[in-house]
Length: 179
Image (cartoon, rainbow, N blue to C red; front, top):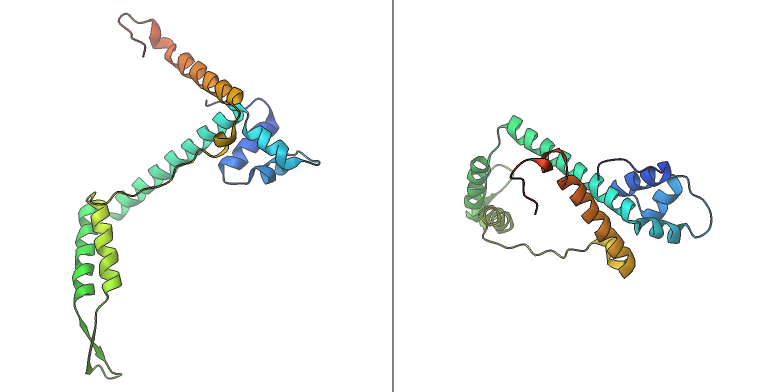
């Protein structure tokens, strides 16, 4: 769903929620007033079109952030090899015991290693090499509490949008297939 919502207040609400505003606060900022704004905001979150619009806005925002990050990395001349090389140096430095010195730079006989720094560098290297699996709990947010009929309505709306997209200008070509 690319198009803005026909109802301007709904669109404003979706924009605010997609940018991290709480549903209740977004409801009020969008111009709604009165008692029960929390319940009314949750009702809007359960509307299939609003929910789909919020998802689209969040996806677009994420894509934009990824492009910016790629550009910054490219402009800075950073790559995986550069990062891994420096992390490897940090591991070596962190595990080497450095002498503790007095105010004049003379060793006083004690040695101290930065094992926490070395450990963190090893962790980052391991993650880059795919040695660790990071487990995260995934929640669907407002969708978790949707009643069955509203969840079905949302599925139907998304199926309709996918079907409409699939029946675009190229669908009439010879040999075209549908999935």
